[in-house]
Image (cartoon, rainbow, N blue to C red; front, side, top):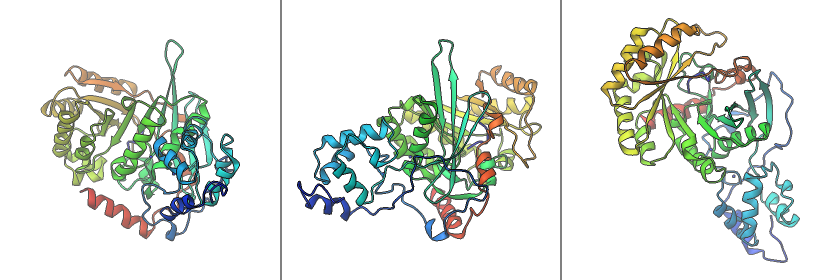
Length: 426
């Protein structure tokens, strides 16, 4: 992701005892901590031992969050309940946003007890820390079950009619293995992929904070979504079908991982693909995005052209403007030539750099940003300039998390997982 900004008992004994065996036989479980309170932050948060961070499945088999209404109905029947109890579960999870099974007040106490005894949980994490910017942007740190922290951001925008659009910027990994040179997330190290429910819960947490429906979701938080594509696609389906956010209101961002754009295209989503380009040529891109060495610019552009041909969805290019590095008018012209060479109808989203501690990069002034945008527009490239939000809330992706949890993050099992993921993708 670019640095600016600038994802699932014994049963009622008087009904049946056999369904319990079915419900527990094929589902292993882990009991989570309560998610109903905000945890008091500590600057020395300790993460779990290496044995708890081995490669995790993309779905926790005993988490309710992320399950469809059909799945929840099936689960209810397995516990000897009528199928309509599954519909109630669905409503309580996605509409009422219950955080604990005991909050399911519309369900029989015996059913709730059975779920708890069998190790089921909703899958909501506590809010560890919250920062609110003057412009209303809210950044949250969620504390996961293994004590790792992830960021999610809520960005409210009110239109002329007074209606509010609320965008949730969600993370897909704990940290990021790609280490783009300007990104705060990469500087904090990489731990693991997020599971399906750990992505979905970020959106629900934003809704809880704002007391308002999230209207848009962007996978532009911590991590590279394409390195966790299974969880991202499962979370995408749940956000669309269960949380009821339209596909066209969801954006999946990537810095570029070989073969994954083709895989995403095969799903024919109506969501937007945003590719983090950041440079008009391969040499400069390798300097800014080290992983670009394994995925040349021409290969990315070809995959983007093929993506448009297969999905009829326009690709958006994210371009972080770094003062004196990639923000000249000449580089804007070079970018326009690149885009015209590979097709028509592309959109460029310019993102003035969000300053982060210890970075050698600087934010360009407004005149430079305007000149860059003008050079693109004069060559018939559709351009937008990101309105920077939350500069006083550690807006850069990964910045707030790094303030609270810098180590230990990279351990040997994590490093092997990251390298394995990249190798498989390549």
